[in-house]
Amino acid sequence: MTATLNLKIITPERVVLETPVKQVTARALDGELTILPNHEPLVTALAVDVLEYKGGEGADETVTVLGGVMEVQDNNVTIVSNVAELGTEIDEARAKQAKDKLEAEKTQKTDKLDLYLTEMALSKAMTRLKAVEMVKRRKGGNRN
Image (cartoon, rainbow, N blue to C red; front, top):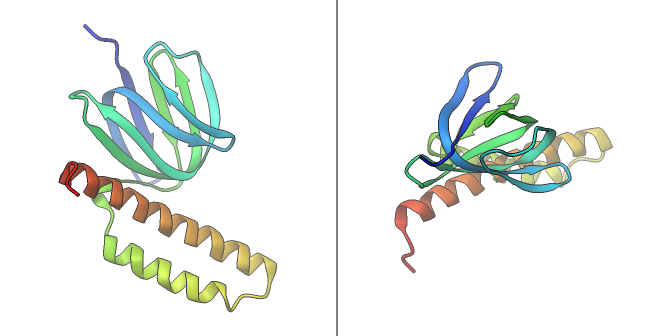
């Protein structure tokens, strides 16, 4: 039997995901990393980005993780984030609308804090759209 990892993604509102996986790829603040079974213990801060994992059947799946912390220990990968969404849960139209609105707002900001907060919100919207595109590509196969 092939070794697996237990992936659990938690937000304050819910357990987003709890499933056995073959690998997890995430972007930490200092770069991308892939966790395989029997990985050394690790705790790292996560960036706002798309997390990918290979499910039990080997299919790639996507979750947006808007920052947070990842802990790896004893083949358990636990991610705690304020916001995380499965790629299949994201409303593409709403994410595009938020991105467009935030891009327009960004040009109007003069206060550094307001600009920073707008850029963070824009980053979140763009991450959601990235996840939607990844899900679409997987569903559509390699059609060009």
